[in-house]
Image 1 (spheres, rainbow, N blue to C red):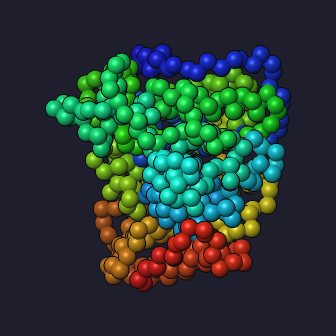
Image 2: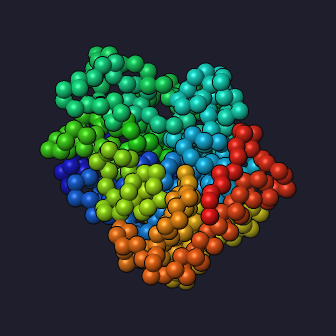
Image 3: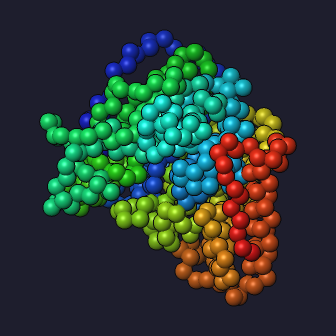
Length: 492
């Protein structure tokens, strides 16, 4: 408990004038979608980690639904983010990989759906579904060379945003040290020790932008997760006092490289390696902000009527201390270690008693779940996700259809019991009893040839259907993407 108190005591919270009025009541649930970046399934206490301190997330796991089989729709960043907003597999939307394509304007997002219902909508943190400026060089692709990639959140139903195109350091996010002492193990590709007062630095090169298209320059020192929450909380407060329901998307950068922990966070892990101090420290910093968020909701009197989701966009990066807890492979792989991620949903009004489930769920389930909760019509375009509302109500013991995955030539068809996996052009398909062999240790394809062929058929039909969506079948047009892309085929 001492470390938790220490952690909370160091938060330099942005000074915000407290509103002394009472929030106006409203009946529709608020929605908060939170996501870490490159957080491994086993990087949190509620999934068994004994080193990294995540007390607030652990409390959420006790209060809500803890998913043992929650999946990111892709093993890399941008595609999963597209799935969160659209309810569709990213291969339908043209977001095939990180920094590839954009979230096309014709796609129907959860923000657009809720904005039409009177919700305030805000995005805070990492965007990675297009650039945020075409005026100057920024991040991976932003600037004058790629004007066709300009694609801010306001083009997809968000009223407000405080966002970056892509990654930033997890402490002092606008800065990188000018020099590194490589003798003590710092590696620029991983991260560095926090900047000391007077230490020389250079601009990191990725900036925060706001919904006016302006580069943000204030309150950008210290913990990046706190910096993000400093903008999300005032947005939530304003909506609450205006009596409006809200959708708040909070996408943290941590623990994506470069990992940097502030002094107090690093000190919490002083007995660990340098890399682990940085990695674990920035995860605990996220946890603190999740605790801060829930405390604010409680203070506003809207905690019970707010649904919070927390997950990761994919598994841990290669070479980091990230933990898959034995699940095979890591980020970029469609084996379990690349896509089985921490998954929590808390909603006190509906989920009155926390429970743990082996029900397979995926980031594509967010949109159809929220639409079902509000009793709205599902969007006209084809969805891959399903509503999880029946799960909350104890009415759906099994997922009705397998979850389809594809990425960089990999194929996976993940059902309740069995999982099919194959690489592009590989005739040797793999099949696992994933319910009983979550670590994919025994390929049983030779014992179930009929099932393998059935899964190959089902996957192929689904994949071609994704291709029809990409080509604009639902919208009656040949191709909707202003960014030139071709549909990635595969050899059957």
